[in-house]
Length: 226
Image 1 (cartoon, rainbow, N blue to C red):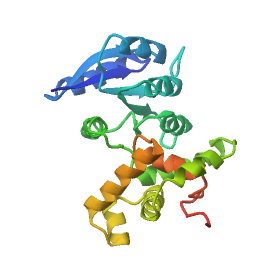
Image 2 (cartoon, helix red, strand yellow):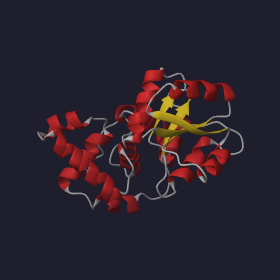
Image 3 (cartoon, helix red, strand yellow):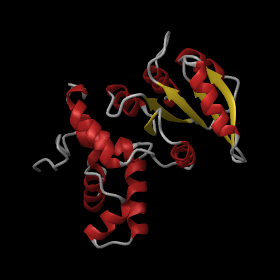
Image 4 (tube, rainbow, N blue to C red):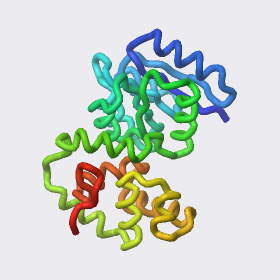
């Protein structure tokens, strides 16, 4: 079955370029396009979509707010944020809004296609280390409200799961975590899955965001004192 993609960008030329790239793939199909976030949300009411390629700077409704509204819906499609500048604050906001990752608009076609497939399969396409750089730069944008409710959520984790979460937040891959904790990679993957389920998170990106919000990890990537 083809991956159903919606292109959301106010620049028609960019949508045309992306559509041409995707149309050449046997496992992808562009089923909808939108020029802003409001139109994207409207399209989703009548069109089944698996992955949304979402621009951030658009008229009427920007990509961040559109992502927030889309991801709040049950059985929402995955959202992949497209940004012009690396470490853009809009990309950071998009991740917090529920996007499964972000990519630059000038990404090579092969990387874009790989990202769409990864997002569709349930993975985050932003390397945790890249997400950490985003958070290091934009940590002042984190909510100023008390993190205590989220700290209570962390109490649901076992000691081992908390260890794994900390290493995920520091940018380690499953293989690196396995080596650090002397576990099999399959075991680490199981722990990550349980962390996501217990904390109600979509992917590894949101694990990193939550780790910063709760103070589990400080700006700079280090663990906070217990």
